[in-house]
Length: 374
Ligand SMILES: *Cc1c(COP(=O)(O)O)cnc(C)c1O
Ligand code: SF4
Image (cartoon, rainbow, N blue to C red; front, side, top):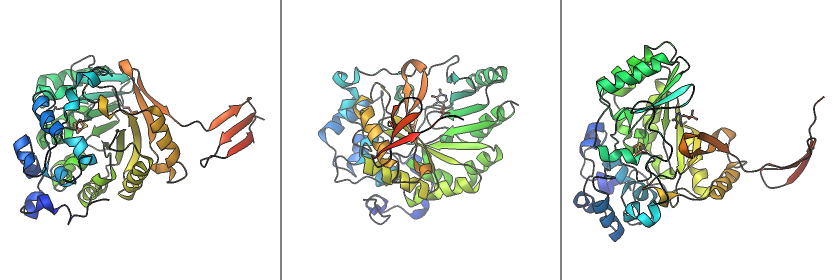
């Protein structure tokens, strides 16, 4: 199922290895138009119309690397579904069930969300290497590609300084690791100067979309300097776990930066127990800890990727017993209106009178178990 590097040559064909491994080359050569994309893939009518109608609203950008993971012959390829716009994104009969900001992220200061007492989320840029079609923050794409300004950063830093209950700053975007290294260094230094900030977390999908970012010292050096830093990344499908992704993760781990993963449950991409099992197994093989499996949020432009809670629970049940406990993510839904995330588990305790309990084992056997306090 997974493509070998040799099979991926259809796009790499005439590109020297040195360029392919260069992050800046990957970014400069992103596919932005229908004409560019048609050189590599025979587009479907709903994609052609999709690219036209999402222009300026939910733009398209695809790195040559991410494009190379696609099977050009398969219209339902999971990479293709995540990267190439389809007209359903702007079909009101579907998207009217969503809101641009269903999670009420727009917080006390533009670019800052303070939902839980101890941690804040900071939007550092609107730039991403690839604009994922399922992005829960796709409302910001229409703002163009720009990094946080000095004035706005100052306001956010002031806010965090004043709130000593905040222990963790979560840098998000867009993708913070697409910022130029000097700017990233400034942002990290500002937060590191605040005594009550213990941990900085960075949400980045570059290990999936342009792992070349971690092939040279630029960003790695800065991340190491501002330790402790944790990375949350976003692998959704086993096809995304390539030798390049593995190399990127390895370089982060060598610098003492733990890498966790947040998967989003997406219809047609990974809403299948076998695929999810393979993804989790491959993640721990490259030493990435699966943290969350998110139910897809009711975001305008993303509604067509949603599936049922039952599907998520079925997948969670399937994973248990078939894979190491530490490879099993927490299945969670982010409640609307900014009420926060809640974890969900299949029902394992099916009956109880307070002392006598009936459990369901991982393989579906009913087990009686008396538990009482002495
Ligand atoms: C998800 C999220 C966090 C982080 O939550 P964790 O459960 O610690 O991953 C923090 N702030 C906001 C606004 C979030 O949406
Ligand atoms: S990289 Fe993350 S923030 Fe950027 S488009 Fe993809 S999901 Fe959204």
